[in-house]
Image (cartoon, rainbow, N blue to C red; front, side, top):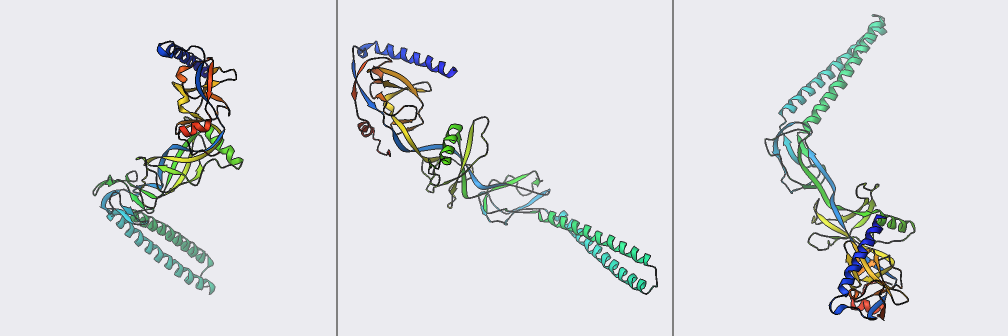
Length: 382
């Protein structure tokens, strides 16, 4: 209701402005004016639609130290391509090496004690079999051997933990990718909270773009009906300098939830990037060809705007003009694409500044084909 009242108020202001303009100078209307009109025709069109895209690497991870220590070596440089498993940083490892040696020695000691416990168990077993000593002693030895075995397991776990911590002093690349900034240099003290750098795999990139709820529902219903409104496997990427990326993308998936604040949902397009031209975080626009059926193409010269509303003059059967607002879906060359106006609707083609709402005019009908040629619209598909 509030939007309706706002439209009425704006329309009244527009009519007042147009009336005041028409009452001055040579534009005063006397009697019927001969005004060019045209009749809108239903049209099917492949409409290029652009969306702001958030471009990301297919893999992008933060590299952090898993143990605390001083940076001893930086083995890579910013912007460098690294291979999976390639060493990137080394931390001082003397303390971890000493802990590892102690753990290895303890493990060997526990193994020796287990061997002695096994030997003792076998010896007591032979004595029990010969009925030289009581079987109670054999049970005792078995328990001692079990304790020795558990000590070996504990020592092995401690040794493996020490080996793992020692290995963490050498930080390697998790996958093949490019190095970002390296804030910590040789001698810096780092811990598991320190961000050493990031690695991004840009062999392919993801481009995320968002659509509103209405557009999502229209696309989803079309898919459920078996229609293909968009060229989902032939998506273009417009780069920041206005050039078209020379590889086409493919629409893969859509997020599961709408954003509450914006009421939009994101689609994901995958683009190949074998040359490494695109980087993580670069800006651009995704452009898709959307096939639209039974839309009307309204010449831009036939419209006028007041604030956020677009208007056109309709011609009824009695030769009177009526102002009407409509919602342009997209601007295409010198036309507005809309589904708000019915096909075969007559509109004022030229001279909108010479007419006003309710005015009686004499129509000079121009075929819509001539309008297309005049405004150089040759790419429509019927």
